[in-house]
Length: 455
Ligand code: TYD
Ligand code: MG
Image (cartoon, rainbow, N blue to C red; front, side):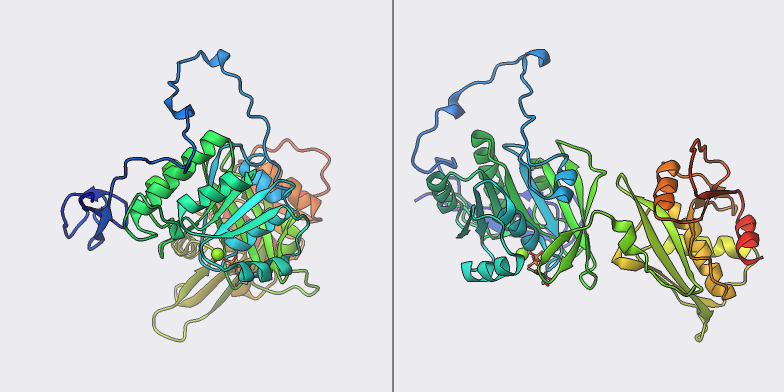
């Protein structure tokens, strides 16, 4: 019998040590180093019974012009949002990791994709039984019958089934539940995740099969397991949103085959996820009466312009220290804007509670929504509503100046398309737009905006 070999891994960053220590020297985290049993096996190949000759082949260097690109064939996932985030579909032989909080809808998204793919798909679940998946599939309503469901966690058994069924696409839910016979530590440990991913990469590259993996995330939002997992895969997607809201955002954190600035929006419904192709129309509440404390911002999520509604509530502080809270917006930035309003525009907000909310459960870090935040706060403070067909796209600087933003023309066009009558942008933005119905108001200081809105 082989000698048992144990190695110590930091559960936070995946650094490896020969003996235990209290603090990880690599990521400086305390108490994260744990012992794992690792055992080397002689044969470490995804194919269980057939000998492969491909791996013995040695690669030769080639001129870039001599290499045929040949990878223009992508698997269309039949889901416009996912296709866009992937950069045009699944690349053969690629590994895609989908991360996200528990219950956000990762399994739902991938099951839904497998049920509508025109290709033969193997959906491997280590988390749910076949009956549970069937129940979920009944809610989603499948469009094709190409999907095979396998409940298995041992990679060697999975590969045996793959050899038998020869699927075009493989989906694994989730990488943390897999375990390989070549390693002795428990499923979800760093060495298991690394080993299983290596086996899957070998399989994907040798057979040109795209593999989609679901990954759990830790409580601070990183994908559980070693950081190296993110290095190993080709694409890392993140599924995010507020579990209490219906909107979900899919974004690429890493993509070897496309840009990371694209994003997909879904709505969670009783019958699965629905693609949202016109997000702005949903995120703005259609109300007849004008309420104080709301303002619309024209923001960009990835490359897509998006109109979002900002709500603010300013009230006299009941306790000594005023409260400030922000949902979907950076609290530090809110403090900064309040200081700017106090110092540069003369509003006494120091003794007031300020609550800020980006509606729809979306979190925005685009500085171009600053001016809408300011307008919402002042509107609530003065109790005068901002006309509901006004919108804003500008950053606010520390001196109270209105600063230009990127891609202003796209933002203006989106506002125009949605029927807004006026958009406030910085005087310093270069705009060469013609034939717009929308009235573009150029402003340079907060005072200009205040005077225009509240007289
Ligand atoms: P799930 O895909 O299980 O999340 P994850 O795999 O990321 O942990 O999502 C489960 C949630 O989605 C659950 O709270 C119920 C909701 N849901 C719907 O609202 N409609 C549906 O059709 C389905 C299948 C799930
Ligand atoms: Mg799941």
